Length: 78
Image 1 (cartoon, one colour):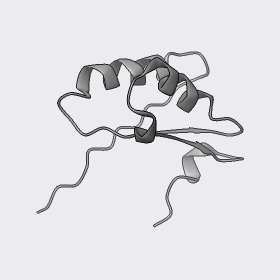
Image 2 (image 1 turned 180 degrees about the vertical axis):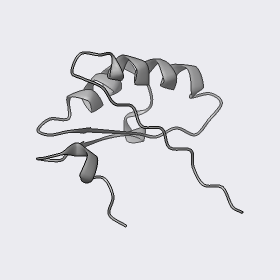
Image 3 (image 1 turned 90 degrees about the horizontal axis):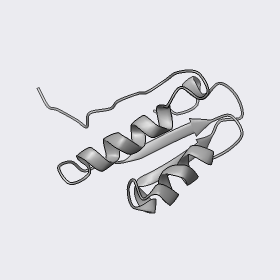
């Protein structure tokens, strides 16, 4: 059995602290693990910009996806 990357999904209502949690996790784990963050939203890349400005990870390790619809169905391309 092979192991791939650990993927963690964080969901919740607007204003519930998802981005703050991701920032805290990045700060705590970035020196121990090879992290990459994908944020998703319907119309903006605001969370990507917030995490980048906060220095949670290097900018090239954070990507924002604008789905234009339901963010839960737009990430997979396999």
